[in-house]
Length: 191
Image (cartoon, rainbow, N blue to C red; front, side):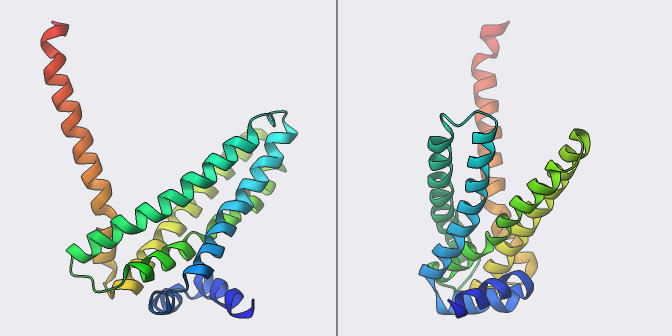
């Protein structure tokens, strides 16, 4: 357990070196453990909150679906980012990137103390703290994913950000194209 805790510490406080080492060593089992921590700790807290507010009837199923969706998103997201990185000349391995991205989700565990702090505040302030804290955690995770791409493929920061943004921009372009197609196809029917 010692080396695992050291990796967790390094990911949070020395991410560039940690992600290079993770990508090189490819500790997929430990990455799975770190990812499960980042999923189960917030999910467990959500479960107890839902139970407290009487929404416990479906909370177990909802949390199970959320966990399964996050695991699938990790696998598919890492595969897509690996493919895009290879298009941009990356030489890293899929397992290295997969492991590094698994560790990159670690800051999600801080949702629990953020939620506890928000519960101690008045309703208006709690919403602001949750929104601001959630945005900070999202940006932290995304920055760790960028560092993971850098560490796995030896890219600079700009190219790693481009790798991360390419699938998002492609999805946005497809959505715009579909909207234009549907709009032009149904425009005569509206007039």
